[in-house]
Image (cartoon, rainbow, N blue to C red; front, side):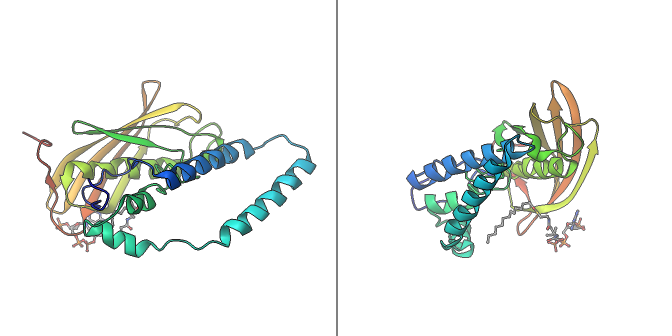
Length: 228
Ligand SMILES: CCCCCCCCCCCCCC(=O)SCCNC(=O)CCNC(=O)[C@H](O)C(C)(C)COP(=O)(O)OP(=O)(O)OC[C@H]1O[C@@H](n2cnc3c(N)ncnc32)[C@H](O)[C@@H]1OP(=O)(O)O
């Protein structure tokens, strides 16, 4: 794709776009914030230190808040009509809640295509805890949603999650690599049926089934994918 031809429907979902100089700094910033979020959980530090950090953070937050935010709608429209720039693609994808390299909240979750399978991996720290030592079930649902939505890279059609059913088969531990996979089970008009699984140390911890509903056209497999 050239500098001025980023198209939302052609962009791989939830995979990083090459960073420009601005986004190299944004990614550095997010990585540092991620370390802070992780270390702040029950950090042992003197109260004086906490006061110092809180003062610094308040000043910094005021400074950041004094800058305007780029509007989303115009860049979305450019991407939707295939006229997006690299900057637009970065502004859209790099802040994804789970996979965005410039999103301080994102673990980040890494996703890629392997034939007709979507694969992913992530290691989550204590800020994501539900039951002690385990990833919160709602966070598991969020990861699944992003993982399974990427199956739309295998088809024409783009839409939202309609239904997501989850069977929590075992706890998903914190601080361990979680491997993920998702597959399209079948397509019926505007509905795409998807299955998702998590594995830790070879044990399956989660099984999910979901239905995505295409906004406009019926889903159909892209060339080179699906039943041959
Ligand atoms: C400008 C650029 C925009 C870019 C956007 C990028 C998108 C990516 C966004 C990323 C987001 C990140 C992820 C997120 O966070 S997604 C956020 C969580 N999801 C939502 O908020 C979705 C809310 N629901 C809706 O908007 C509508 O209900 C949808 C769009 C889902 C369907 O309403 P619509 O009016 O279009 O559908 P229809 O009534 O004509 O039915 C059509 C067929 O579908 C079947 N059906 C209907 N509903 C469901 C259901 N819930 N489950 C299973 N099946 C369902 C229905 O029976 C029928 O089948 P059949 O009878 O024909 O067999």
